[in-house]
Amino acid sequence: MYIHLSQEDIRPLYQQIADQIKGQIMDGTIRPGEELPSIRQLAQQLLISVITVKRAYDDLEREGFIYTRQGLGTFAANIESSELDAMRFTQAEEILGEAIKKCQKLGLRNNEISHIITNLSKEDKNDDRS
Amino acid sequence: MMIEANGLCKKYPAFSLENINIMLPEGYIMGFIGPNGSGKTTTIKLLMNLVKPDKGNIKLFGMEWDEQNEIQLKQRIGYVGEEQPFYDEMTVKWTSDFVSRFYPNWDDKVYNELMVQFNIDRKKKVGELSKGNRVKFALALALSHKPDLMILDEPTSGLDPIIRRDILKILSKFIGDGKRSILFSTHITEDLDKIADYITLINNGRLLISCEKDEIINKIKKVHINNSEFEKIPPSFFIAHKSIGNEVIAVTSDFGAFESIYKNMTGKKPEVYAMDLSDIMLAYVKGEVC
Image (tube, rainbow over all chains, first blue to last red):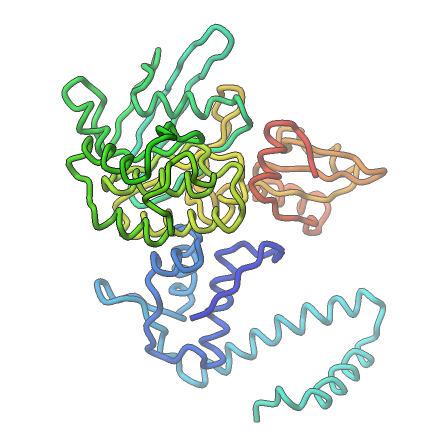
């Protein structure tokens, strides 16, 4: 599992970790049931506070992305594909919502913004999932 | 608890340490920060029983220092300071043989592994080692008697970032099993931004902060607001501020409380920036905002 932490990122470190693991679970890099490094292992790998990693894992567990079996380890949850799709949509709404707000701040009208989104998605065929 | 220090006081003619409290549980790293002359080394001397406190009490591994347990407790501490008091004319091998005799728990296997990892030539005279290798050698000696608590007093000052990172890796591994702890005093706060679990900040012999690092980072933040807003909020919310024309950049010590007051007042979220430990230290110690 590869996690990249950045000091320039405005999100706190625990949130950067949780967001990246979430992303890897949603895009299938981490498969359902796959074992994650222990809190102390990940802390050592990233040279980061044990408490920070614990907070990230606690948040992920509360949101149902991972689960811990006492004495066995921490694993990626088996999330139903319909639920996974719902999560992807929620996250896409968050990302686009932010971007749209910024565009509105620049003074663009909504039909102009959707025009840009349509054009950009046509250009970037590499990322097409279907 | 690895370290339990309550109400430590120590008076010197020109300096006094007042009411220092430190709690460090098993399995964690505490960063101990403050400007030069703030009392970090004095506090460490008190913890290690090299100096007696005027008031307050200290427990290491759940035990108070006394004449019966002094040697036993010292065996369980690994100490590396800023200067390493070696005999410079003697070789590395002679030095490790000499040091190992004082520690019944000395483990040659641990020592040999560290020396291979650090790539230090044992036939060299200690005085010929580079500054980085001298610190690494001191670290190898301290780790080889298998202490439960490492106390580091500014060992990384003057070392380059690559060697400092090597040292952080060793420290992170040391606490890896969750049973051992480290008190790491340094003024290079960037060494602690990521790795420290707890932070204790002192200045001028007084304790300013001692708690989980993430809690500090979550609570102490820099906010960007305008002057009229700033004037309506009680000054007790701010540790430091500076005005730029009509705007104010202020450091709040309780972001959660500040945010709710601000939202009630203006109906919007404040513009906020994260601070690293060096920004926080500057705000607390000098009242400056950068």
